[in-house]
Amino acid sequence: MFRSVSAILGLLLGSSVVSLAQTQAPSPSPREPEITANGRGEVRLAPDYAYVTVGVTTQSPSAVETASQNAAKVAAIISALRALGLTEQQVTTSGYNLTQIYEYPKNQQPRLSGFTARNAIRAEVRHLDDLGKVIDAAINAGATDVSSVQFLASSTDQARRTALADAVKQARSDADVMARAAGGSLGRLISVNTSGVSQPIAIRGNTFESVQVTAAGLSGGMPTPIAPGELNVIAMVFTRWEFVPSLSR
Image 1 (cartoon, one colour):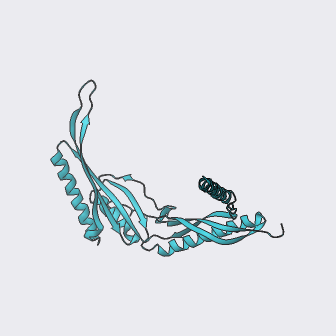
Image 2 (cartoon, one colour; image 1 turned 135 degrees about the horizontal axis):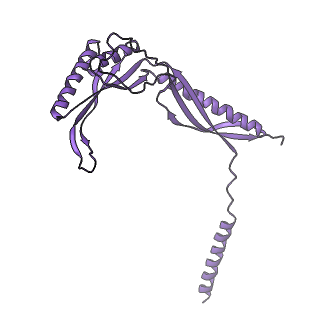
């Protein structure tokens, strides 16, 4: 009997000690104040090569005839571009489709009236001074549209690093301004992250809208002028800093 009572008292005392220890556990220390700041860096550079895409569209009542006409014009365009010095690797097919054309007479079933084919050719132009010549040669050889010109830079590593450094500098400067305005100073850097660096983006005059050309082409006309403009490399960073309160406050 006494042993049972002693055991029960021991358990009660033990649970009381555990409960007391739990209730007296120290509360977590308050989080140190922080300042967060974002930064943006931007670097412009000149492009040194380009991709131009030209298309050939043909149409006739027969699928075979449509495809044959298209193939002949594409072969002529490729030959003209190769004559300018572009290699086989620089001239590639970027798209091809052959579709049916239907007429829709009033109160009648749709009627097949013919076929249309489009072949898109992509040319890499490594010397921008030759870009206008490439476009003119393609048009004179039978291209019916120029759908895009994309300007690029072969080396963007230095621009990317500079943009990142500028973004961090801006974030630190903004964080320092906020710390001083809040009555303290900027402490150590806690973390810095980036959402990445954008691929070079075309700005100011180096986009080329899709155009349609006449069957006569540009023979004997003025060479096509091209303005490359500049490319933009943008970096974004996100930083966290310690905020050091002023001791005088």
